Every structure is written in structure tokens, then in C-alpha cells.
Length: 115
Image (cartoon, rainbow, N blue to C red; front, top):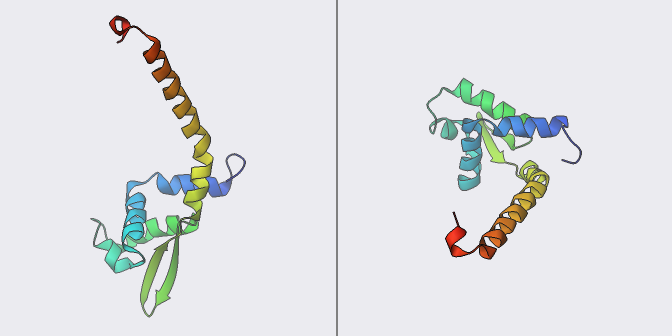
């Protein structure tokens, strides 16, 4: 995820913007590969609606699909999330530095001037 605004980055961010898709990723992370039928039981939606969410995740590279007979099994693919973490790291460092500076300022303030 180097550079800014690539199509791959946009697909990952768009996929993660939806709470249903984040929940699918959580389920796959915690339980391992799951069939669509097992996934759909966790949501108040029909299989075609969940399949649309799975397509978005697949297009973003966040899940992979394999067929086992008539079933489709989905598996978490974490590489795009690691790329996302690399993209977010400078922002994390920015806020960590700001909070450290605030802590230093509060440590220097007399007790009667603290908020």
C-alpha cells in the first residue's frame, strides 16, 4: 500500500467501512475457514445479501474462496490488513508523540494548575 489512493487501497478501505464485512472478517479470524451457510447463520440477512458482502471482501483480497462440492468455503487473507497497518503506522506514531508531549506538559504543571 505504498503511494496514495491506489485502487487496491480504496477497495480495502471500502470493504472495511461496512460493519457486516468487518464481522465476517472477525468470524473467519476466530473460527478459521467457514462455509457460506455457516456464515449466514450469524447475520439477519439472506444468503444472496451476504454473498454480495463476500464478493466485496474477495475483490479487496481480504478473503479467498474455494469450492468443496456444492459448498463455498471462505478463508481470511490477512496480507491486505498488514499493508493497512503499514499505512496507518505513521498516524499511530503521530498520536503517540502528541500524547507523550501532553503527558510531559502535565508533569511540568503545578498541581493547582492542572485541569
